[in-house]
Length: 592
Ligand code: C2E
Ligand code: CA
Ligand code: CA
Image 1 (cartoon, rainbow, N blue to C red):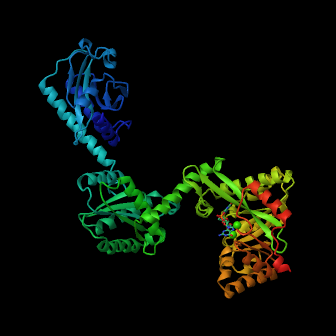
Image 2 (image 1 turned 45 degrees about the vertical axis):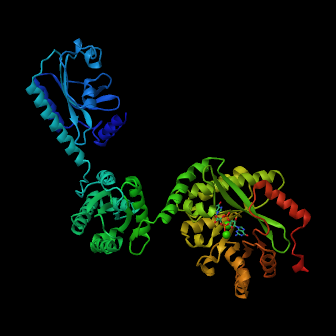
Image 3 (image 1 turned 180 degrees about the vertical axis):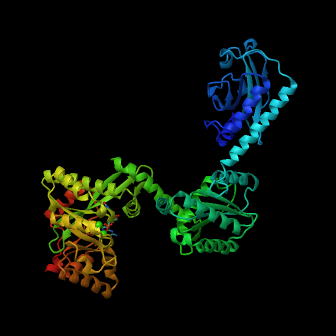
């Protein structure tokens, strides 16, 4: 029943079902009962399988089953129903009302302006009753008054009380209307966001909601001053306003207008201090893009605007694809953590440059999503690091690495693993406690682990992270600086940290083939690090030439595809045994 489906959605749209009683409606039902001189009257709304009473006189219940309820007939056929005596009516005699001793029923339909029957205004008696034409006419007038109230109530749900502007519901409904009446035309819609959620929360705490309401009223005023007659503004979220620009406006002409609004906002001193307004806009064709999709795209454009100097941006589908993918990564990762099939570890060996002997392996995380397939850590780690899940990620990697180490220990391969940490891990107050518990649980010696921390993460240190690094180092766990050379750290600063090893970023190793300058750079990095007492590891060694050169330069250890790609746990032990028995890897050419 397509019509019934639409009728129900019209009813739900009214947001009346299961709401509190309201005097505006009760006044009418009392009037009906008095006017007829009958004990029962109700405003009865026809939901999927019940009649729910928005207002009632003389009944206890809030609802009755829809089955065989006369009000349901009224709503469905949008015609009055009068039953003089239910007991004598073949159909209604055994209905809920009939069985409750009701004899008389008279109901007139409540119909929306778009023609949906929401329910009935009805009057009931416990004796048979004869209704006059005049009474019927009055009941219909009163039903029209009920509908006026409903419409009023409805529009109230569509106005934001703080700014007096239409709200998000109204915007959604206007976008749907546009889709019907302006299908295919080109339109522009903009979204102003005054503050990021975190900023807003902070302000709520500091200045309170009524002060913020005042600010929003000011924004509404500024918008009203700037928007001409054809543009409608909406207040769609605590700090968000939207407006649809008149049809035919060109994007080029529109930009100066946005800049003008931006200036007006920044002219308000209060905004300058407390908020960072940004405007995202998009061009859309009503009917081709759904209202939900438009709002989502606008939110994405606002994100882009935030990082743009002008604080103005137009929706860009390619940036949006990235946002969406990042969003998806954030959404899916928590499940991956608890699903054994999704996350796994691989290990990449690090060897002594001179002897070619295995020294340790770097632990690298792999994620295979059931639908999306493998997702590169280069893609997901930065996203997760910026989320609350950085902690869980590292906890998982550490626990799984230690478990693996304990397996290897028990099979006679007590090797060393190097685990990557994120900057935020260093801020976790309980990091050391959790780690100690895990180390003890799996019986792992502290010198079996090293933590790699990027140069950039080291620079973000606080008192807490400095203490943690000291504790780790004092306990015998080694620390290394990862991706060395890519940050802007000063070595004199890094020297204060209890770090033993420096891993030269693979971009420098890769560049060595470019020429002498690049080689000299790597040579000086190695010499400098040595003079400061660090061991030096070269990452991303892909060719024999690079390996030979680095060995001559005095680099202590090598890691890279030329030696081995990251491999699964079993593969690593096999790789180690093969190398060591075959003595396959030896830089004879150099040592000779
Ligand atoms: P990273 O710590 O610099 O790790 C080394 C990356 O270089 C790895 O990429 C490795 O596969 C790759 N690689 C190794 N040798 C070569 C080579 O010869 N040539 C080239 N082109 N690449 C080589 P992967 O596994 O994709 O990891 C990327 C990054 O993701 C890592 O860079 C690290 O920053 C992060 N990551 C991976 N696993 C973890 C983890 O468990 N925790 C944290 N916090 N970050 C991780
Ligand atoms: Ca690393
Ligand atoms: Ca690295």
